Structures are given as C-alpha cells and as structure tokens.
Length: 298
Image (cartoon, rainbow, N blue to C red; front, side, top):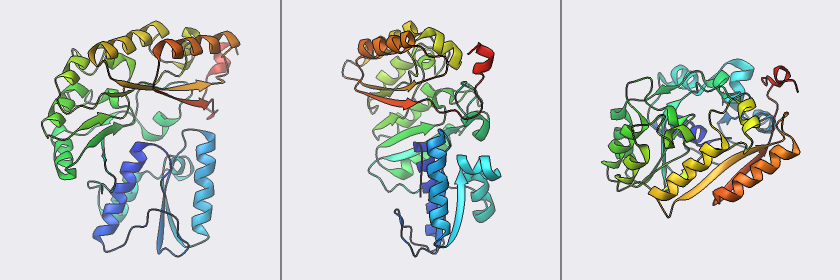
C-alpha cells in the first residue's frame, strides 16, 4: 500500500522486488487475506499522515503489517532504507510494473521551506552515482521518469549536476522526463551552465515541466523561505517556452499560508494567469508543527 509521491512509489517497487525474489506474489491493491502487508506512508500534509495511519490500522486488523515511509519516521524512525537493510540486507533496483519506469536518483532536501517537514524526515540531499542510474534505466528498458525529493539538487554532493545526469540518461535511448524542477535550475543557478540548452540537445527528453510555484506573492515566498521572486518565476516559465514552444508546464500552489492576505492570494492568481499552466495542483496549507510564522509577526 503506497501513499504519497513518486519517490514513495519507487521505494515501494524496491520493496516489492525483494519480496518477489523471495517467492512472494505482490498484490497492488488491498486484500483481506494477504500474508504480509507493507504500508509506505506519507506525511507531507496532516491529511496524508492521517490517511497513512488509517491505512496502517486497517492492515493491522488483517495480519502482519510492516510500516515504513515518512509518517513512520515520525512515529518510530523507520525509513525504507532501514527496512530494506534489516529484512533484505540492502536496497536493490525497483520493479517497474507501469508503462513508465520511475527512477529515483536523489533523496533528502537542503532547502528547509518553512511549511515543509520533509527535510527533517529524509535528511540532507544525497545523490546516486550516474553510472548506477544509467544501469537501472537500461534495465527498465522503457520510458522513464527521473525523480527525487529535491531533484534540482542532484549531483551537488558528488561533483556533478542534473544536466550531466540528463545527458547520460538520454544516451540510453529511452524517452525520459523529470518529475519536478526548481526555478533556480531553469535560471542556471544550479543544474548546469545552461540547463534548458542541455535538455534541448537531449533527443529523448519529453518536454513536461513541473515547476512548484507555491505562491505568487513575493512576501509570502520570503516567509516560505522560497528562493525566488514571482518575477523570476515568470522569467523561468518564459525561458521554458522559448526553448520548448510546445512544453507542458504545471505547478504546485499552497493557499491559506498563515501570513497570506487577500492581496497575496490575488497576486498568486495573477501569476497563474500569466504563466498559463496546463495544470495547477492546489493544496491548502497544512501545519506540520514546524512553521516559524510566530517569528514573522503573524
């Protein structure tokens, strides 16, 4: 049972592969008579954590239940890596049951946005070596989605960057896309000297860009500890469209942040209109007990 992001889906597939190799049959949906239930939890919002807890309770009523993921880190400190090390002696590659393969290349985050609990659960940013990623892409043998908790920081800890990874993945010969990238990568503050030019030279790159916005108000962006302005965000969108006229661009937006006013929300709506997104994922603000808004005078 997997809740949450593409990284969780990849990690669940890692666990599934280990059980398959031990002779188990993996059932992707809930059944009341399974031998073992594995619940990979999410804690990005309070609602996600509650849903995770409810799923765990439901499974425990039916049989042996193994719990991992972000919500379990809060409760007991158990990460997916801990589970794989304890039960199977380490992590391997994931099964890839979907039409596209999810390939996790990075974990953790160094950004510490004021609303986000993830850096406290997954730790600092770490990257997989390019050779390991390439080997898994070749093993998958189909279109891939390159994913991570903070994909934009890929390589900063191992002396490379996201652009270099994309070049290597492109040479594998399979279509690939990126799960999410930050404004700083597009504006060449990370990811390579000219990240969009690098992508444009990759013949297998699928031009889908998920670029989290969170707010269109510069004041709220500062309060969130996001490292760009609304003008820089729109500049990044313009650069994407210049490099890829047919690009599909989507975004995340958080509404109801504690310091957000009606004027701030109007500014966000204005940026959304100007950016002309294909899709916007809108989330209500969720207090994870970490927000520093008291220091902001709220």
